Length: 83
Image (cartoon, rainbow, N blue to C red; front, side):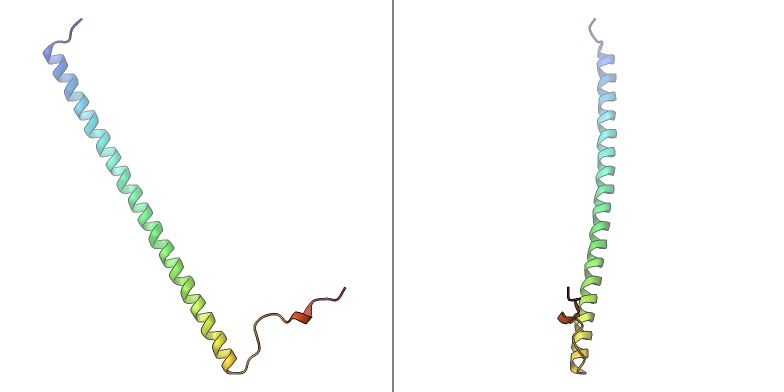
């Protein structure tokens, strides 16, 4: 049985509304994903900055210790038990 003009129009409106809903859902999902990756990027950046600062502080401390005449912070090679 053939569709009437009113049925075709109603089906087209329904399809258009579905497309709009799907597009809005995808857009919201994209925004959420983007926000999550931005937050992860900021977290990683902060961790990297902290790690760099820690390395720099350790380096400065080693230099200060060396300037005072302190010994090496590494383990001495002769401390291993002899078999």
